[in-house]
Length: 190
Image (cartoon, rainbow, N blue to C red; front, side, top):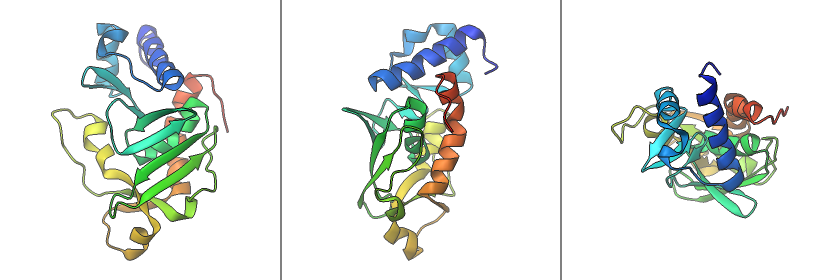
């Protein structure tokens, strides 16, 4: 919120674009000064000439979020749980268990609350290590690859590393972290 007003307006425009179209803008769409200000604080990321904007990824991540008849990629499991609150739309999340590959599905209400679908069959793992897969320090390249959904069986087997959160716990984290984007879009939700 401490960004210059032009950069904040460009950020709001990008978030609105993602929510309205389920797609990215080209990297040059925000103007050079605004883009550099947003890149500097890791609010946006250049993903092959398109702008990813947390929680939305311009590139496939293995985590899909269905918004009506449109689908978006989420940067990580926490981000996927935030898409409904940020967009103000109910959603359906589809991902594979990070450990065994089991297909998982979760329903989210428009206010970021969980639907009952598979809530107890899914958890979120936050691996201990961060991964550096690219030449950037962007969260989507370092932290996000380590935050994935896992199935109940893998949760109970004890064969995982890192922190494991229930989906309800992870949704609280997601909604708290991404609440500023909902407020920025004037979607004040409890």
